[in-house]
Amino acid sequence: MNRNLTVLTLMLALALPASVDAARKPKITPVEKTVQDLQAALTKGDEQSVDKLVLALENKPQDVVPVARLLLAAADDKAQATALLLLSHQLSGDSALLLGTLLDNPEFEKRIEVIEMLGAMKGVPEAVQILQKLARSNLPYEREKAVEGLGKLADPTTVPTIAGACSDGLFSVRISACKALGSFDDKLARETLGKVLATDTNVGVRTEAAKALGATKTRASVPFLLAGLKDESLAVQNATSDALRDVTGMDLGPDYPAWESWDKKNR
Image 1 (cartoon, one colour):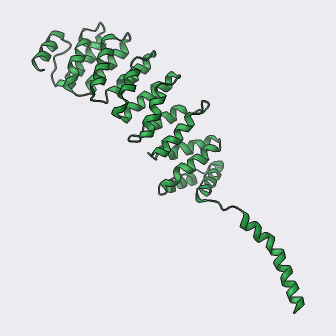
Image 2 (spheres, one colour; image 1 turned 45 degrees about the vertical axis):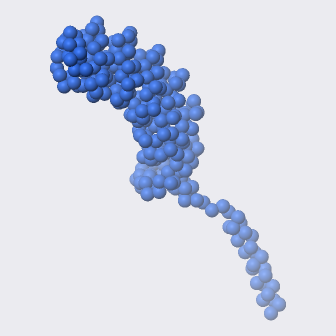
Image 3 (cartoon, helix red, strand yellow; image 1 turned 135 degrees about the vertical axis):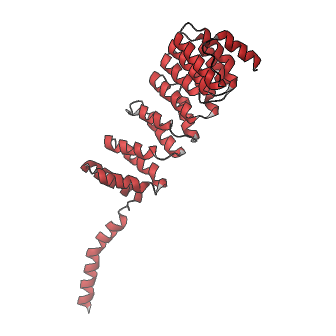
């Protein structure tokens, strides 16, 4: 009996360390497991498995941002691309904020791609806030893409920011700002576009201002468009004539006196 007890005690003693180690080993979470599986599939170039894992995350939206965050931390090009793909399909404040942290790193190489993703997050206030900040970036191309994104988000609170970009020193930023303002039926937007049409030194910017006033589809744009009919550029005159037709339904061509008379009669 004593001999059997000794053997049993010895067996338990030998098994105990393994049991303790197993108990102390941290359990892997579902998010970590998904990340491991994605990284393994990416390393092997197994696109089919990657697609299945990404598709599965559509049914677990709460896991998308945590998975994307871990993939981005891997500092691997394929992992980062997969993370951005995941975030592009989820319009949420958490997704926008994570994208914003990427832009805090000036060395992040896919900045423009991230800015464009933020511009697709309509209805997400965090995306609006980040793009408004980027509209004042020191990098011209970032300002251009940020203003373009604000136009797509069509949040009326951003009109002052976009209007400010119409005074940017780079003509391509001013063009993007004009296009963006065309998304708003707003007094400040019309006034700003009218000023650009009458005073900007770049023909392309003035032309875009006329087009944007036409895009507003409102009769209130007519007084601001009239100046474009006197422009020295035929391109601006034609764009203005087209815009006037769009907002009034009338086709009087680039005839300033005719449009001025029409405007006075129809106020």
